Amino acid sequence: MVKTGGEEEFKADAMKKASQYAQGLQFWFFKRKLRIGGKKNGHAIDAPLFPGYVFMGAETMDAYLFEKIKSARNFYHFLSSNMNIISLRGSDLECLHHLIRFGESSGFSRVFFDTNDRIVIVDGLLAGFKGSIISVNRRKQRVKVRIEMCGSINAVDLGYECINKVSL
Image 1: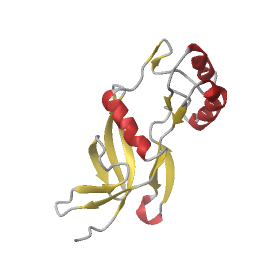
Image 2 (image 1 turned 120 degrees about the horizontal axis):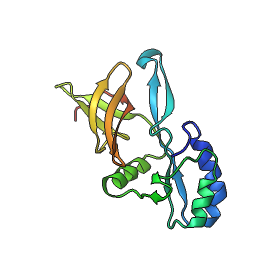
Image 3 (image 1 turned 90 degrees about the horizontal axis):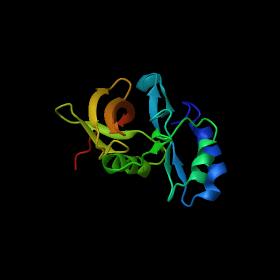
Image 4 (image 1 turned 180 degrees about the horizontal axis):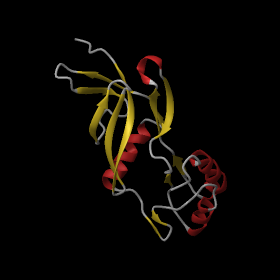
């Protein structure tokens, strides 16, 4: 957990301080595209998917690496605490791997609406995602998705672009 808005600065500082001490060290701060101002007059922005959270991957974690990362700018604490660092497992790890496939900044998912007015996801971050859709806002072109990660349930908005269904 890091200071919200300071995720990129943390990543850069932590990598600078710790990369030579940990083989395979990586950090991910996930962002998603959202349309602001509606589909006609709006524009797309990158918004944090999990504000204040940076995910870390390393082959090993020792006390020296712990101290280097802890000293990086904007660092608050490891989850669940600095005394009890947890690693992602099971469905949490599956969710993380799904996000990594799309890179740190995912674009819009492509969707269409079927004859029963249900959303059909063609590709993008939402395709094959194991979260449940709570609501669809067609005007803002957003889908609110329920994601369970690290023992808590989060509702996040993800952007989509609507395509016309093509008959084959």
